Image 1: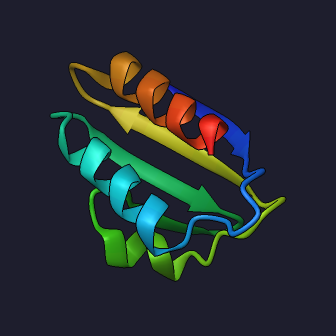
Image 2 (image 1 turned 180 degrees about the vertical axis):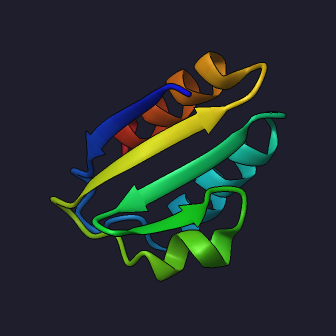
Image 3 (image 1 turned 180 degrees about the horizontal axis):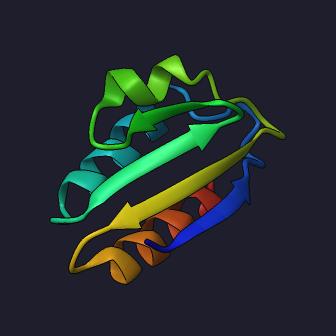
Length: 84
């Protein structure tokens, strides 16, 4: 199960719009995708779960994927977060 830590540099963090895009991207993969902040984790395919993590600028999150397209999913989701 590949995973990667990413720090958000977006001034507004992972608020509604980017969280919606992130979750929509995650649903495009068959792999399970989990995003974690500290000791809390969320199903990345659920926008409400992602929003409840309250990810702000400077926060470090971990994205983990598990499934047949896990590497591709991880690469695309990390690329999205890093581009914000």
